[in-house]
Image (tube, rainbow, N blue to C red; front, side):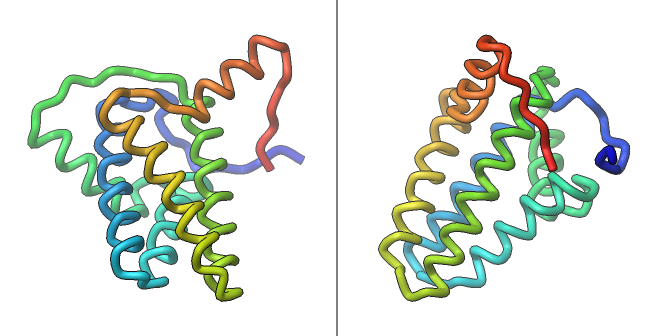
Length: 148
């Protein structure tokens, strides 16, 4: 059975993805400095809405869209499949960190969120997406990834 998904534009704007990564870094830093688990729930909600529902249901996505329009950044198309794979990896890391937090393994949760923060900092500042590079490596080896 094929996955049903809301129709979205198949072109992802690289400027908006970088702005979104910057906003995610701010939220993850807020979690790391405050240890407030509610921030993890907000991050997971954002990832779930962007991946499985409509991106317009994600508040962080809407804020990044607004900021890109205000800043007047040009639209740079990028690979949707690589970004979707990266979003799935990020969501998995967030679920793992939430599980660690709920099991009172706060150090593990901090390490996972810290790694994700470093990844998103690289994406926001230098346009280096680690999971996208891994996806391209898998594609070059003719490994086809399927999403559930």
